[in-house]
Length: 343
Image (cartoon, rainbow, N blue to C red; front, side):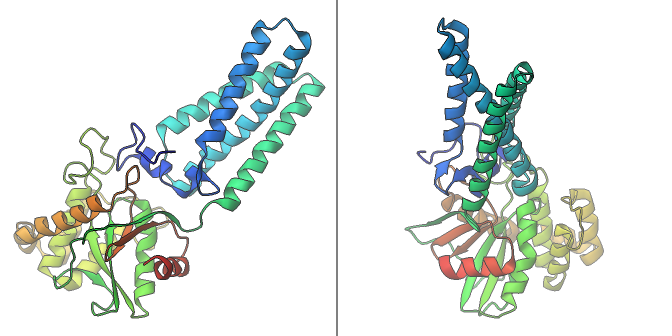
């Protein structure tokens, strides 16, 4: 509720990806954990009432309500697991632990009460409430954005630098794009940049910003490194750019596996072999030692750090001037509309 970062959900973690997604709130503002806390509190109160109360009527009411809550929790838990699997495509271990506990408790209540016809009606009623919640959640989730902001002080700019750009570098609007070559959301958005840039009025500066703590100073060192190799992939891509600009975009497309239905991040060893095949071993070694690569990554990391809002550190991130946003669009058209509205 306060907007601070959750313990164990530091930048780059799966938990951060889930808790920063557009599915983390109801109506776009109310954390989904709030009604969940209410359900589990109801479970506790009903359990205590059933265990200690001598009032038979109270025990019966508590038992019926607990059966309804069991149906709702079971449906809601399955809904949130499905969202992580199919929509966010990341898994928060704390969320999954909560859902597992909820499913176990619900199944225990259902198993104990299933032979009772009245109990089945209560459980079906709870399940219907869970389905209604999922429908409301799906219909009210923000369509295309889950984080944005404005930085008061001027951000570093790539203007005048010899950097990889999708589109016309002299376009009226130039947007810096922070991304990671192992980020599935970045891979989804990447082709849309070319589609949008084809109109000629927007250009995108590619700023690799690995989410690995081994090179990104804004990722806490104590976070599990889910992006091992991202730093090397970024350096290889920038080395190809340094050696031969024309080959960079071929390498960039290959890293994101355009056309691959079952895409997985490229291993560093394969990426190096690909880079060698494009520019040769000698030129790659020479380019990797170019100090420009480290200075450009430092600029990208500064952009990342200064546009990371408290508790939210998602990518891909689009920056224009002092305005930034992390989109969750579903198409190039939607992304373009978002750029026009926000930037």
